[in-house]
Length: 416
Image (tube, rainbow, N blue to C red; front, side):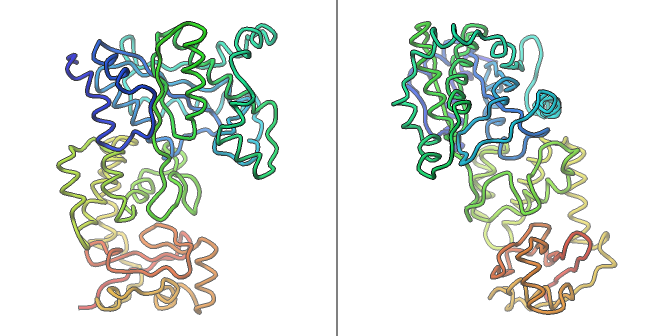
């Protein structure tokens, strides 16, 4: 990797929409031009897989490595024992050491699909290696004096809990100090100059920057990415059926592909920039597609994201399965098919009415209850708003799939 490429990191991630806040970005950019640098992002082990809500920070690490630098994946084997209060309005469930170890094992495999590990590549570390052996009195004396309760009370993660009169335990209050100490340790061990994370981590990251400066006189930096929601306000990584996991053992490649295929029209360009490596001019072309043609861009998005998460073969198989289901009907020959007019779809058909027409519900009332209960799906995407209207944009090559639960389906085609 040439030195001219190394200075491209901030340009690339800014152009693609990854950057929300940063500390002294001009100085950071100068450091990146000097030569390969080290950064880290931390991942707590609260489940045995990451979900797509973690995909944005993973892509940040991937771009960091692609532009010639060394990424550190920090596994929170130590901090998970406490629980990060950031973005939470209640305490996390306490996990046993065995639970944390099992979760860490499940998470590790994800990163090998996005990063290159090895002697000169990415590294994975566990903060339990230094946190579990801390002497509490020495730690408070050496590092606790650099943190004021006054300052900590100004952080959004703390203020939100207090405003809602939700308890914030002393255990959780210590989390931000331990995260700051992680940065200091990684500076000392790996000369890590940058911590990245979501915008809810801003206070924790700034604490780490300031601690490294005060204790070691280190010039280190912080960068956050925006917390993503869909255009309709839904949180990334969740669906009505549960989390959209990155591990194939917890969610099939086909269901993963379908999640991205059902992206809202307004999000296609943004998600192509964040979650694929397609050139920006190609993304601009895809983003400009109108009407039913935007579905082609969604298929490309789904295939590109699935390819990185599950491999080329799984992505191609998922795309082909969807094509046969929706275009050829090969996998859906036994499914009932109903016809609607183009004018009806253009005006929008209430989903509960379409469920009744397709024979998937006996009455409007039953259909409404099905929708409210999360059992109705359009093109495998859960619909929970009983007032939702199925429209022309839902068609994929003139057909859409309507489902009641996981076993009852019907195809809806445009008449004529």
